Length: 93
Image (cartoon, rainbow, N blue to C red; front, side):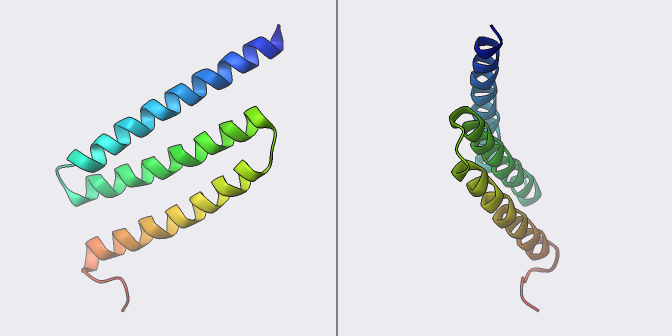
């Protein structure tokens, strides 16, 4: 019984994360300002990392966890660079 509940909860989490990624992608495309697009991109990579973690839980392999860690690190650096570019107009001083 508990395996069936866990399986359905993981499936529901995957469906909801894909829906959240769709909403964030829509905001990236239709955002009225650049700041909105940066925040939507930030949300998109966080949701992508969470989706990879849920896939890792479902399959039981560690490759998804490593990929989620890599996406999180690169996403943080990209958000910081985009924020600095929007504040000053240049990334490298």
